[in-house]
Length: 178
Image (cartoon, rainbow, N blue to C red; front, side, top):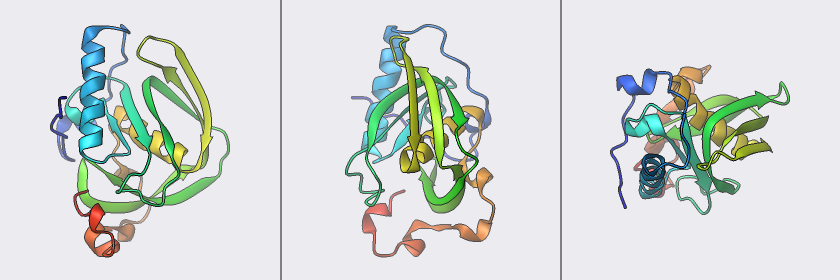
């Protein structure tokens, strides 16, 4: 198990456009994916993008099942998504609270497409093509934003809806270490 340091907002790698993965099914990719999984789990994250651990590649992992940081969220199947492409299926935008392991201690209301299609590849290079909505769609969009150098506060429309988790949700002690 290798838990890596999660870069915080302000680090230049988090503002870069990530490079596409060229070679699949390699030992280096497998090690990166294991490190990302271990890091996400250790931090109780809903997802993690490779740039968040200092690797500027188009790789994200995500999944939510009984996560204390998102106690009311729908489950999202654990997914490894490489070289993703997101296509909105409806113009409908939903506002929702988001946090980020690279922006610890804060939550903000972020607009996201409610229905999307995402495509990409698994670690072996097999195509992935899913249509999702709701929280699943939000998680995918959030993680894929990291691949284009965007953190959720950059998407917010109203910074009055940004605050410390401990103030916004005082009854949820489990959110304290965002």
